[in-house]
Image (cartoon, rainbow, N blue to C red; front, side, top):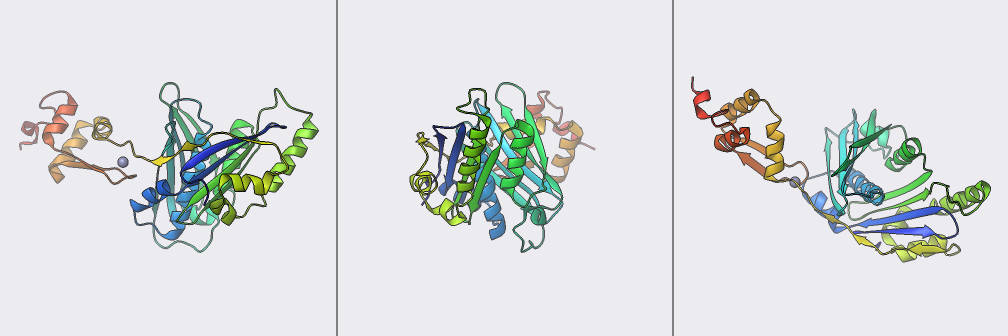
Length: 296
Ligand SMILES: [Zn+2]
């Protein structure tokens, strides 16, 4: 079994290439238990979670990172999020029957993959790549090359039980260990070895076994692993904040037709209910959406 619910970085000591391994089990199962997903979506969500775990290892600040794929195909949306505390959550939407294909374009149709980084302090950043490759991993490689000019290889696997991923990345070459040719050779060798890894191996081997299987001839420095977990940071307060952005008339309309306003968290299914009194409170002006306004 791969190192479950852990993320672990490693470095090739003699060259400027870094790596990250992620393995998910309990956190992945927690995500799947919130909705009744078809197996194909379970696999895709596992890949999304493993990917966002790998990407979050590059976060050097406090904040949130999300990965969202949208398309006009049978699966309309896949989303996974992580933060600097290594909390993970994910959700998918789909319609009708799913195709047999494993090709991401066949499943999501024409669409795009957005990587959004939201630091708690500072500006939001978003990078977007079109869904033009066969797999999520390849679309992400495009993102790193286009947005960050970093040569990257990503391997993802998920089977509804466990999910795992490996990232290999060439570091910016300012304080390079050797010449460009040497670096290219190392990159070709290390990524070629990486590509010999089967999905089964990625899911089943421990990080030690996996690195030995691929890189026993390299000098690999393995850092301490960090734990990952499923966690949803939705709250009554956050839902109220969303309601605050709506116009008074809109809120009034919802209260009129439903008696109260309910907001369900799409990630964890928590339900938040707001009656007329609590809505009036968030308006900050007593009577802004008060009973008197609804009298006809
Ligand atoms: Zn939630």
